[in-house]
Amino acid sequence: MRAHVVKIGNSQGVRIPKPILEQTGIKEDVELEVEKNQIIIRPISNPRVSWDLAFKTMAEKDDDVLIHETENISHSWDEKEWQW
Image (cartoon, rainbow, N blue to C red; front, side):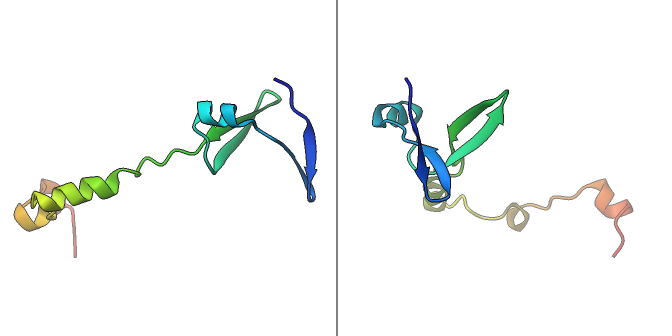
């Protein structure tokens, strides 16, 4: 597919057809990279998108306590190497 570079203020841009955006999953922000004289456009993934649901589920199961509150976790390094 060919596209025309258009002026946008002091910059330039390319209009990306809706079907291409849908195929790539691009919705808003993108990551741009230049590699071997090519412009690569990638959707920005949000790896933490499901954390809210995971935290809610943990809270419902009373599994959202800090480890150090429930267990005595120590290492020999704590006893020998560390100085206060």
